[in-house]
Length: 122
Image (cartoon, rainbow, N blue to C red; front, side, top):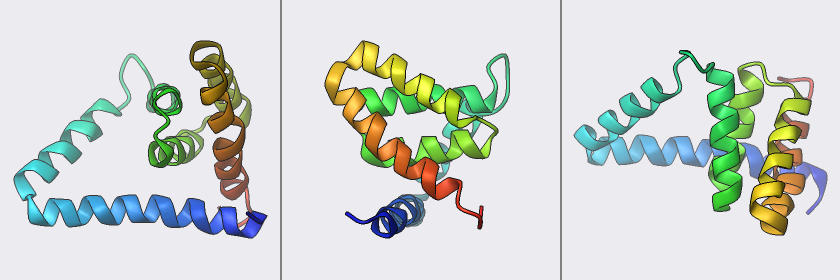
């Protein structure tokens, strides 16, 4: 895949997730609304910062091989102030825990999101 194709894939995937969640919430408003309220509460700053919660979620997503959540939480971690170094160290821990499968997702998909996030329009 060319670099511009990765950019489109990352942006489209995050958008598709948000649109899918919105559609789900329209069809099952009680479930969708409660899920979004629950996750919003889980990611609020507390003893653990929102940024660090997204780094934790990224680590879980990489270990679970959940491509959409990898992209979503990489972007969210960067947007809440994580540095590229913090994201990459998170991937290093995933590699230590999850081996080659975790590392392969971390060094490819995560890097594509970092590259897209760091483009001038962000």
